[in-house]
Amino acid sequence: MEEKALEVYDVIRSIRDPEKPNTLEELDVVTEKCVEVQELGEDEYLIIIKFSPTVPHCSLATLIGESLTTTTDAAGADLKLTDGNLKEG
Image (tube, rainbow, N blue to C red; front, side):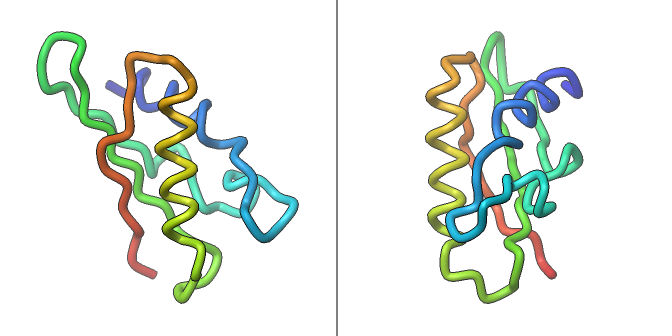
């Protein structure tokens, strides 16, 4: 499943932060380790992305989560984001 997790990460890492000119990868909002893929069945996967906003009280965390969902959907892969979580800290 590590290969599929890296595939998802490659899709999401270049998303731009809504408030800054940087990508989510550059700001450490998403990392390779924040993506987990679990196989549910044949060609069916659960993708969990645990992202860390730049500040704990980030008012745009919902928008970042929606961007993660939209971007994975638009990639046209057989991978879909079904769960996005904020990491503690």
